[in-house]
Length: 516
Image (tube, rainbow, N blue to C red; front, side, top):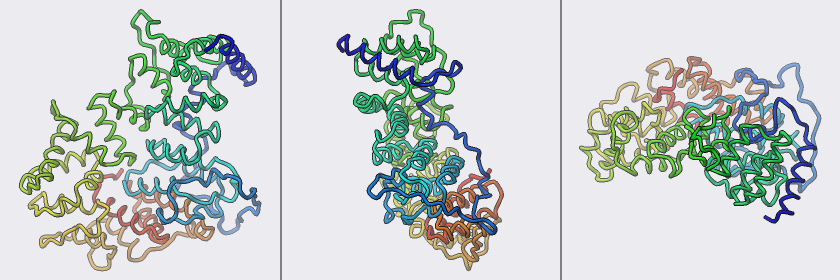
């Protein structure tokens, strides 16, 4: 870059810094703007079993927000149309955007894969925005933030692309986070080069200038930021080492900041000091899927993301079978057993599959990866004549698959519990007796469902999205012993037409050990 151009850039950054309010105790840094989407919302949580509704004695405000026809409403952006999701286009009805955003921010991570999938569908759905959102983007941002919080980076990236990553600085902030975590920062820096006003943090601009090979401008910008106090000493030191790896000849490792951001993670990786991601938010695990990480780290990251429902099962399969384990214990035992099962199924060797399937089930149950296993092998196992424990495992796997209604075979030695599970898969529980309290709570939702008054009020206001979030919360509470919540949540899902989600959730409540 010519010197004159570099001076102009620095002067513009000086003007930007002087125009922004400075706080001595909180210098502008990557943490101030990057990764806010991965941090807990500061909004005061509302108990999820006590939704705010307009019930008796209250009214919905009659204030109506209007918008000009033809204006882009970012809150309406989605990538799954109603004909795919089965959800109404008027998903939020008369709900308030702020209430919906609060629900999303406080929605606990879902332990049941069926509810994880339902949450993803809700977050990605195309829909009309709440009536008070106007042409805003706050609900879109809340949906993206929830995707990032559960590690669904591919889905968040798709939603950002649909909205236009440069449509606003807030969207680009999240886009840059995702790009850093998946290793596509060059594309994000390209956007920033064309529109530098998208980045209100100097460390990000310095990082991108250096990535582009413009070290003169990056150095001048860093020096200016240091002089103005708009970059912390820790960030400045890390950026200096990133631009000049030979700067530190002592061999010392800089202390990681708290919290870690995607930018600092990438900077530490670039200086040869990669940070462990196991204790970081689940979205950071995505970085370990790259070829730069070792095989064990890749597998552990894939398992963590799979448990969160954020990774396609085939990606887990590819990692499990890419090499031969050179050690034993822990994850290696799981990999070895999985590879034996995969080989047996590929060879259509029923005897070998019968021998190894129980061990694989134990390993995948320990890792809470039963549903990905079912997605990969349920249909193939259903075509094999298995015996003993393997037959029982295959029966459970078939019930955890997307073909739960058609795959389970009728077995002469079926237990009362198996009979209940088979009837549940068919959606008809009028015959078999419930074998345990959880089954009894589920049975009521399918034989005598009742909608609680608070839910009915929201349904009358077409607030379907909020109803789904609260129903999921009730069910999650049920895994900790509140069985009435299981009945209510499943009843609501069935009432609004989410029969498949209700059945799959009920089957998982019976088959998976997710009880708190």
